[in-house]
Image (cartoon, rainbow, N blue to C red; front, side, top):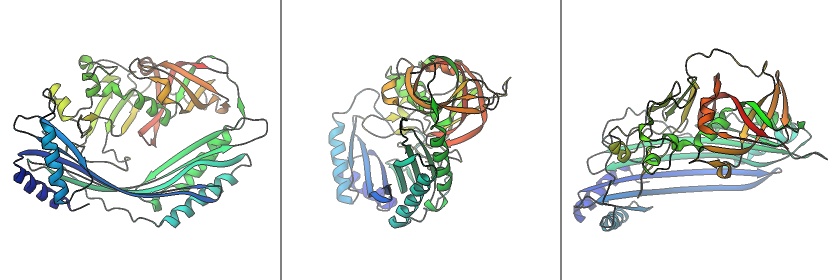
Length: 446
């Protein structure tokens, strides 16, 4: 992508030429290489360089038009500004989006050097070795149907006609392995693991192989489970996937659209066990792809969503913040309708628990490792869920894989019935979280 300063200059010149006084531009470039393998052969190699900008223009009547383009040379920008200006006369008249009041606040941004991209041949070689080691880990493991090793460079910028100019770059590398077993007279079993780092060289591929193998092998000797109510332990990934499915709870835009489990006046309400705290923390040290500003140029920051079980904040764009008479939080994405979404969850134990619970001593608890079919089994506006899962029945440290079962409940009731939040946190794709113990949920077995 062209130099950001050049784009800003083109934009100012073209806007002046067109008589446009107020505009902003958000853009990004993603340079991505990923590989997949299958039974010792490369299966898929993908390389892409995607770039695009979103241009918003306000006219003299202060209505707004939006257009997107991949062309950021002077001619392309002129056309985008012209199109957005023409579209502005058809824009909404009420609650018109505006610049973020924080778009020009200086950010203490530490420049990150991009990681060195490794050749595709090296990516394939590393993944073939990983697949081979997984297949050798146990005779029952017959395939690694889902796998991937990717590296990505990301550049982003935001600028507006009031002088805001923000830019940042970072690199990401990820590995994902998901193995499957085949044994005569038995159902196939599977499990997966994931790792993320700034560069391929730093990726813990060996750890990913070991975790995938251990989990898969632990599912080989499975048993049916009786239907009933059980004490539940959610793995970090399982709890965060459920939290993500009900993220309308914290979303100010969802509240305004009457599409949330919360209402504007719920701030200060006890919605969870006092043992739980949940932050949205884009700049958490464990967040490898941390972004220092959102699509509106607002600096990202730590937002305390739930503190000791009390709902403390919502996530805001500039528009929702204005309507709630508060500050934007750095969670907006730019577009014809500005949307709001979480950046990176940080879940941890608030205060000290009266009881220390452990899988080594607990009797007949269910450890849920992975929730499935979230798109179908979650009723986000009713708060209910019914989801198949992978997991184990744990009795004094002994884990027995569960053949197949479904967990069901109400998310707000689940938050209230948390009885223990472990100290040790894990990094997952959605954030940092420890294991979460819930007093009981309904399990439907075979």
